[in-house]
Length: 500
Image 1 (cartoon, rainbow, N blue to C red):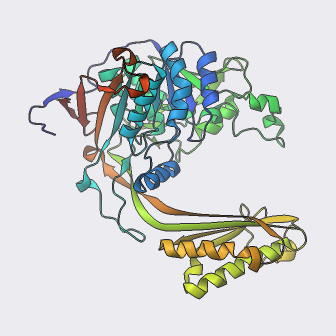
Image 2: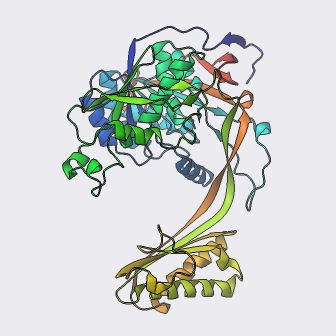
Image 3: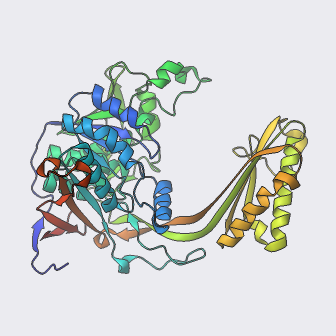
């Protein structure tokens, strides 16, 4: 692209308040979350402005790389399921959907959402914000078995999303890898007129985003425990757990909420549990936008359904100079197998099966059995017994399921392992059943830090208007919005704007 005619403009220096309070809901806290719960939040919480679907973890990012390399979808394959259910409601209520379901192919996700919107008869704008790879900035790191997959995923901050909101005012905003809290922080910055140097507000906004990002973990999910009187819910209370939302004011005040009179629990205990989740040092929680000190955070319940969160402070008066980058590497081929044994001596029979599979594999590939990890679901898959503990000292088992995982250099080795595992049907110990096996190409995400000045990103938007054509909705082609493609090196630097 020719940047010769581009002109420079400052980003984030001029801002204005669009609202005094913005209401942001969490519709998904991970890739396997429940669309029906998000729909319920939309329908029962009035005046929602944004709904964030946070569906991308490092585990699922690796899976998307694996699928993309194999010729499949590099974006979340459930995006159509989510959008088909939610778009009618968000369109009716004027709610903007923000999601990181774009993963490693946000443009592919954008295309699928536009086609679906046309099919449903909705006139919407779908924006994307994603990293643009500078191949010279990816370090040549040692790999496990093969060369790099290609590409990378840097944890972007709120800046690309804010730019997309300002430029195209989208109905749906799809991103690549973005820090979880930044997905929520972006609409706060855009709506409340915060500047990039408003560190106190950015800290409070990041607190709200961090608390919301895991969905129902804030409101009683992954919290209930029958053996703990303080955490024992009825099944009905657990079933009616509500996804959370937050009201964030222009001065950084944060009030968290759930659906009125819903189940689950929104309390000091649930908020504290989520506050400490995946943060490392509470006094220095690093995001691309701000480093936050959570040490003085406190919670003040207003009712069973609303609670104030306050006390987040900036740990520094600057954004981090480096960002976390994930570079996919080929890691080999994984083969796995499972088989169940029940009744007397089931553990001993599982051990015999383990021995046989390893011995059979050694007949073809000497030494390769060392690539296999074995464990017994129900006995030692979660609790590992120290060396030397006799079998007689372990619990008496009535059933056990042997699981064997192997990571191999070649597909042939992994396939041979699966063949030998399935041979247990007629060649193994008595009473085995329920054999399952699997084979997949493994990709590891190698982590490194990179100067934020080296990270480039891009935003664009497309629009579909089913009413503009006499063709059937399914045949309508999305049209490119008049606008700009934007490159940035970081959110405090000068950006380069080019007309599409």
